[in-house]
Image 1: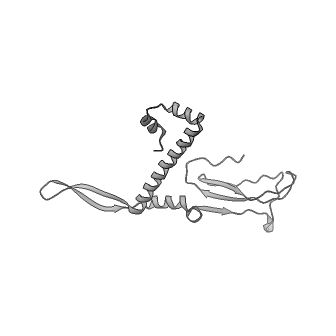
Image 2: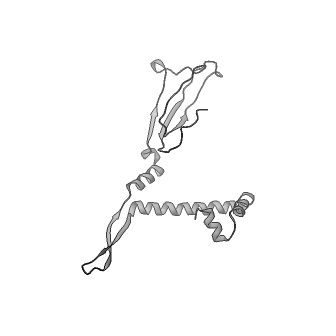
Length: 162
C-alpha cells in the first residue's frame, strides 16, 4: 500500500524509524520504492477496471409487502475517470495544450538584450520552454525561444518568471 503511516502501523514501527532506515539503508530504500510502485500499480489497475467496467450501483427499496429488497441499478461509468487516464497515458493525443509562437516583424527573431518581453498567461497555465537561445552574451544578440503553454487546471499561482 502506498501509505507510509499504514505500512508502519502494520509493521509495528514508528514513522520516524522507517524514514531514518530508508535514508540510511540503501536496500531498505530499494524495497520501499518497490512496495510503493506495487501499490501504485494496483491502484492504477483498479482505476482502469472502474473506467472500463463501470461500478455496480444499488439501493434499497420496499417491495409490495413492505420488506426491504436490494434493487440493482444500471452500472455507472465515469467519463471523467476515463478522460484522466487517457490524458495520463496518451498526453500527446489527449492533453490540453496551446502553442504560441512569438516573433518580431516579418517573422524575424525578437532582439533580446536590454528589451523586456512580458507575456501574460491565465492563472491555470504552466509554461514549458523549449528550443534554443543563441545570442552573444546578452549584448543584443538575436535568438529564438519556443514556448508551449499547457492548461493545468490547478489552483496554483503562475510560475515565477525568474
